[in-house]
Amino acid sequence: MAPRASVKRYVRRQVMRAAYRTDLRRPLDPNLAVYGAYWNRGVACNPAAIHAKARELAPHIRGVWAVSSRHRDRMPPGVPYVIEGSRPYWRAMATATYLVNNSSFPGGFTRRPGQRYLQTHHGTPLKTMGLDQRAYPELARKADFAKILAHVGQWDFSLSANPHSTEVWDRVYPGSYQRLDLGYPRNDVYFTATAEDIAKIRAELGIHADQTALLYAPTHRDYREGFVPDLDPERLARELGTKYMVLVRAHYFYGRSAGLGSAPTGRVLDVTGHPRVEELCLAADALITDYSSLTFDYACLDRPIVVHAPDWDTYRTTRGTYFDLLSGRPGDTPGPVTATSDELVEVFRAGEWRSPASAALRTAFRERFCPYDDGHAAERVVRRFFAVPFAPPSR
Image (cartoon, rainbow, N blue to C red; front, side, top):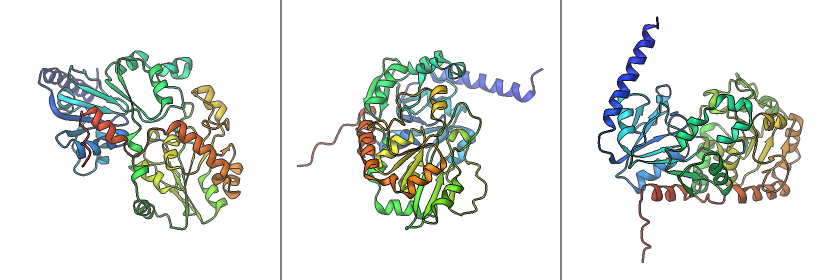
């Protein structure tokens, strides 16, 4: 016999589903938008930037966030939200005219005629995505490609940060949606933040004005369990000296902590739980990463990027990639490449991380992957998606 709690959850789901089917017969609310990010983890990424700009340019649109009960504590004060799976959630999903997400709305929903769904995505693809994962057995075993295609069938618009992304999305997520080659709204802040804004963020993180802040932000590995960094942040901090601060940001799949324990040097800071990765990028003087899509966003700042990739061959074999990030070719590689901790330390000690050669690689990388980002992507998206007219030029 099933446990009583399981029976109660089943009955509740059935009741919610029945109520949802009733709500599907209600008229759409022309002024309601539902936002979601990272499978309902809270206010973040492109949907957050779109929501903020919509409140400015289309104040008649009421924005509501879909949030998992596990992440309700992430919600900023004053931001309306509904808990995933609740009665208000299903009513909002049934009656909202506008739906904005960077992943998907868990639990499934029926997209009604008249609803407009914007898929913003949440990064530029280096690793294989969507239908391309069929070529990798370990990925294919975990993926439901029929479900992926069904989800794509709900989209009305697909947002791209660059031509590379558009080309990949078209192939791996085939559908009848419209492409929006408008840039990433989440990157606008890299063009609009002032020196005072950046100084405040650094001060709040405890970074001294004379310190060089290095943001270490590795991505998730499908072939590993848990967060296993490919470098020792403590050792890096010790080797580089007191003028450096190392910020460690684990992938959100691993929770809100990198699990680093105590920091004897006092110059290693776990920022995994920080609510806005954009602020961490603004605070950092350089990015140390591997295959993370953060690489493409950070390039907007035109600050040094070091690729630390000791497991490149394994990653390419198990996950697949669209180009060789380590090739050293302009447009493919954003800066110096290291494979060992000693090489990484030497890149900073010798000044290679900010050399003219590194700057040239970064320029080519930006030209390829940041052509639409200029600080106005959110406005372009809001005006296109919510049909907000552009103001006539002043005379």
